[in-house]
Image (cartoon, rainbow, N blue to C red; front, side, top):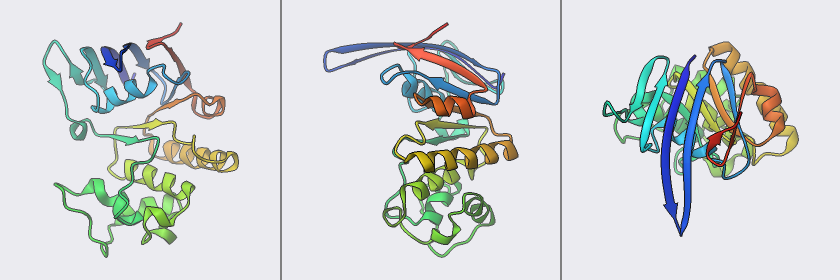
Length: 221
């Protein structure tokens, strides 16, 4: 079991109330968190990544406590060593593809050099076949290339898990099929476990070694 969590979080906004109470045990390398929009999938993923603090509960990854409210443990996102790809990719618009991929390798707030070449960055550019556009800005490349850039940036730091939030939703069907195959190949080669959230049955079919259904903030079944 590489990920175990049991967390609660109350959210209030614009007169609306939502209660997240997610209990999850990931026993397979590829896990899909499946459910409708507004089910709490993104909130759960953000809690694992350290971008949302639960009110109570525990999150463990590979036996390490990432969050434990009772013990006062709440590791920063950097210390959790997870690769996270947002639904909108969250690429830096002023950095090239190569700089975006290498950003997580830099300490502090310094941007990677435009002319720099790091072997590990070049490896991931080649793995996702974006090395020909390495010197272009995100605005100058296609949606599929932006997705590959985001995936390469998440994986270049050798994370202990990859967290993906609706990674293929903005792409056309043919490109979704192709990128799913590319991602599956990379995950099988590296052994990095995956937690993917989606409401697309095709994501479930490809990556759902374990499928967890979430609705109204709770795991179903």
